[in-house]
Amino acid sequence: MPQGKPDVVPQDGLTTRQRRNRPLLVVHTGDMKGKSTAAFGMALRAWNQGWSIGVFQFVKSAKWKVGEEAVFRTLGELHEQTGQGGPVVWNKMGEGWSWARKAGTEEDHAANAREGWAEIKRQLLDEQHDFYVLDEFSYLLKWGWLDVDDVVEALTNRPGHQHVVITGRAAPPKLIEAADLVVEMTKVKHPMDAGQKGQRGIEW
View (cartoon, rainbow, N blue to C red):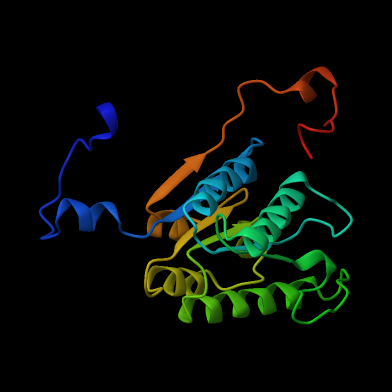
């Protein structure tokens, strides 16, 4: 793709502008770190365009205060105060979904995951956001908490112009097949190979 030009232009009856502006389903998978980091980098670009951002963060503990959350909550406040960028809504399963206020436990994680997915489907149907980050979402499919066919159908047939980015290891083949853009993070070298643990400002 030299200079951002596609190697092949499909005969699909669409204009260049129509094809360029199609909403994307993006999957960041693989065993290496950086999947969420890349997704939130895309979300920063979306915010700068004035798009509405909806983040659904699965699996991660509510006690883990990640830097991206603090930044995006601040950007949401900035939008409310000045109109700059776009609105941001951050939902976190580990502390109970914001609309339910239920504490998460080991026993009800699967139920909370299904509740979160049901809300995502409602928001997609309502075209509530322009850009969604479903962080660590692939694990819910891997563990069988959600039905892969239901997820793929809802994402593939979402209305309007809504971009969706999914992160997590072991993304199932059906999700990869349905996606428009798939990135696999592959380890070449990692500080942990030399016994170094994650550090402030890099991992969180």
